[in-house]
Image (cartoon, rainbow, N blue to C red; front, side):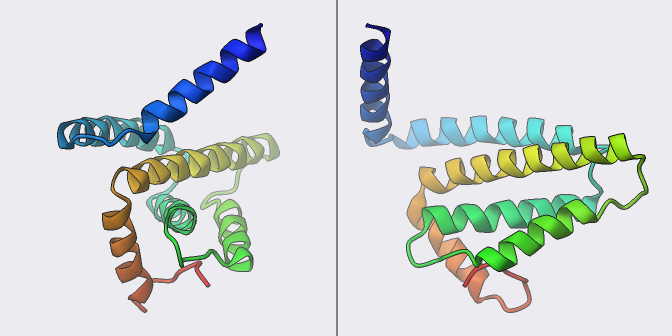
Amino acid sequence: MNLIFNGLKAIGFAALIALPMSAASARDLVGRLDEAWKDAIEDQEGVLTPKQTTMLHDTAYQAAVARVCDGINIDQAKYAKAVNDLLADTGDKFEDEAEIMRSAHTLVMLGTSYGLFLAEGNIDRDKFCLAATETKADMSMPNLWQ
């Protein structure tokens, strides 16, 4: 019985998110995402340096673009290297336990940022993907795309 109820909830949720979003609803959602970004960035304070935060956001953004935008694909080898570089770039020397916690926190923040970029991309896919195409064409920015 519980399985059926959960299945119906999932179908109802899928139908709800498939409905067209009004401009006011989209603005409200973007406002909530702004608050989510604020909360996520506050969680990074004291753990990640500004350079690491930039690396993390670039990596998460490019992975989200590859997921949301047709025709832009992630280069798995470049992505793996970027994540490894992010985890290796400690900035300071930590004791083993502190380093494990920092690495775990970094991976959680990478996932959080990826999720927020996915949400932003799906609010206005056309605008998001147009901006991503322009970013990809900018040769001054390192990218993880094929």
